[in-house]
Length: 330
Ligand SMILES: *[C@@H]1O[C@H](CO)[C@@H](O)[C@H](O)[C@H]1NC(C)=O
Ligand SMILES: *[C@@H]1O[C@H](CO)[C@@H](O)[C@H](O)[C@H]1NC(C)=O
Image 1 (cartoon, protein in one colour):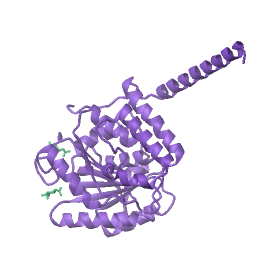
Image 2 (cartoon, rainbow, N blue to C red; image 1 turned 90 degrees about the vertical axis):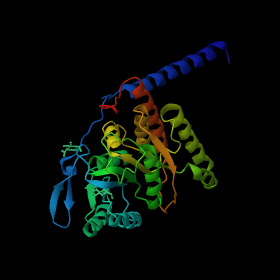
Image 3 (cartoon, rainbow, N blue to C red; image 1 turned 120 degrees about the horizontal axis):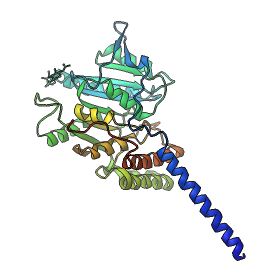
Image 4 (cartoon, protein in one colour; image 1 turned 90 degrees about the horizontal axis):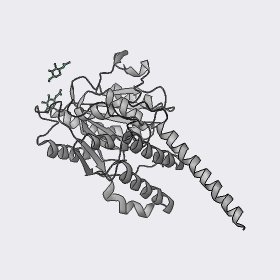
């Protein structure tokens, strides 16, 4: 190869790099409304009370709390797995209701195209503690969780995956951790205030060794790459950011879910990024985890999207293109 040709190749590579760099900067800076768009279709503001046949307005997260625990269940095409989860969840919460701890469950159908809504409504018919929020279009799990949170009445808010992979009794471990952080039992105490802050994350980190044997090399690589990027760019204090079992006080939920931009898989990371930025107390608690048959494996392109989202979270907040609306002391 002559020197001229070599230089030519180097030149082309440089051009390509510059192009790529510009593209990345463009993606990071475009559409940069500092606060998230809180769009909500008119029909998504109501739930259908199947027992009275009435359409009723959901309350707002800004209202005062009126039940002790809200459980938010994001569900996208989960007609098969939802009943297992709901049965376990209801069994546990009904037991606690008998000792005075009130609850509600909000099933958020994320634009499901199967019978998820009907399945959820069949529970609402039996239990007046169950409400169904039917999103008109699929938004992604983060969008579903956010809208569920914004419609919830609980003093403490928990979101739990519809695939029932966590043993619901583990809520007690989260509750214990909450008590340790605040110094009193938040759920049962009258001492809770609108400034009691805590974010408790269920964690599968202790199961990782076991998991490793079951996954392909490629999946492991993706997983480790993801963990590495999360630690490097966004969240330092939580190892398993993606566990679908997290509990927040109402005050913390207000701060976090008015600031959340990302509606897809990486919303957990943004959620914790915001919590860290606001210096909210965060804890990670080991929970049981059973993969239920039909667990959705994250497709390859979703990993790419997550990678992109991680970069967005990190850079957009750093350059001030995204902002957190309120702080702990407001
Ligand atoms: C909410 O609770 C606070 C304090 O407990 C009280 O001062 C306020 O009036 C309540 N707001 C509403 C709308 O009930
Ligand atoms: C919340 O739980 C406490 C303790 O069990 C109970 O006394 C109180 O009535 C509950 N609050 C509501 C609104 O259900």
